[in-house]
Amino acid sequence: MKINAIITAGGTSSRFGNKNKLLEKVYGKEIINYTIDAFATSNVDEIVVCSHISIMDELKQLFKNYPKVVLTEGGSTRQQSVYNGLKFSKCDYVIIHDGARPMITTDMVNHCIEMVKDMKALTVATKTIDTIKEVEHGKIIRTIDRSKLYNTQTPQAFEYSMIKHAHDTLKDQNFTDDAGMLEALGKTVYILDGSYKNIKITTQFDIETAKIFLK
Image (cartoon, rainbow, N blue to C red; front, side, top):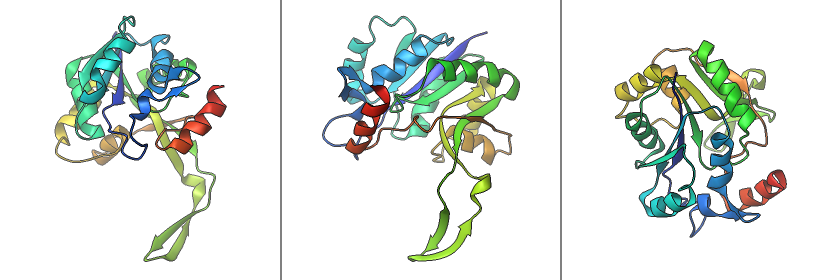
């Protein structure tokens, strides 16, 4: 049985600033390194990093001594990057994770590996704690019952054949997460409780938050 991880690193970090956020250092270590280290010490067999072409050479240097890591070029969207990773290397199960979520832990990765064998499709998520309003034209339309709401994170884990079929079928559309693709095809996706620390680095402010959690 082969288990792959696909790490998305194909973005341009347009909301972050002049530097690619994945190469921003926290305590002397790149954001992407924190992410990869959690997977490198996990039970995955291969880590496919789908990289933006502009940082490919730097990532090759960073991970030249990581035997599990292989690099391939990402796409113009997150969905295309994941699809490139799925086509690059076949496996039995695959765990898909945002490179910009450095607070992921090896324990969580291994938990996903064990659970996906039974569930076939799952996503890590946290229960919504804020009151959510639906708004149109600056006016509140209704308050949504938050008891059924979750904030989706990554990792998301799948039986390879199932998620590959979803990407083949929906390749001309634009989904922001892989679980949503299976939902669109009427497949069941299960929830694993995640961590509120597992934030995605998007802006400079997120770096300050990451410093607290990574200290």
